Length: 308
Image 1 (cartoon, rainbow, N blue to C red):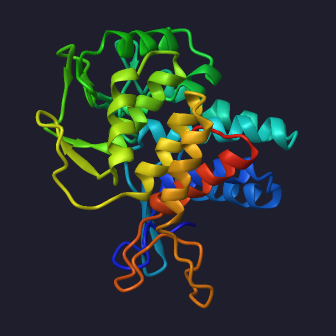
Image 2: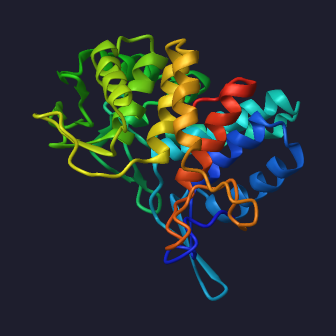
């Protein structure tokens, strides 16, 4: 299983990491490793609900599942499994994808929309939908009788902008959209990617991102009103997601420029055990997310991409 980091969270394992790694293994056509990770999924992350625990924690030799899932992580895993069924000609992956997709399109739904999570033991659902969770690729692959795909697209179409920024989430019971005052660029690029997946315009955000990149660097957070950066750090995940976003817009040359910027922060010392990775050598600070997304983005530029 993939550790979340190599310091204080080395004992936890996220369904997010598993899903991203499954997509990477499909992309690279690494069949044996994919089969091993599919076994990890079934043995450790699933329960009788067929929803995926979003987090596992290991204490000594005991692994405990979180009682909740995360809709986007389950959906990403469904996407990877369907891709694997096709790439590896192994229909058992499609069967597993259908098992996970069924509760995602029935129990993990409220008023015709996905919900961020469901408490697996109680079937209690959340009320919020984070817009970045609307993975068009996964929704398209899921069979649904409740118009989940169409409702998700309409939700994005109707969403207000705080130009150039997107709303972060939607309250299903109150029928209102929420904006963060501090804009997280990972969230924004994920939402921008979802818009592009559904064929919706993201031009104001694209202009903002291009200006920020050209002036350099793109920072991790911005003030929603002033549009000025409020942190002084860059994020590997931001640049990796930007690659996918730009590829969706057919901006291949720009995507290559962003990838070059991303790889400039990679550990390049060939004598280091961390060569090729993305982490702070002095503190060992890193995150699986900030390593898996660049892997997917790099492979996407070379071999054709699977949206994370």
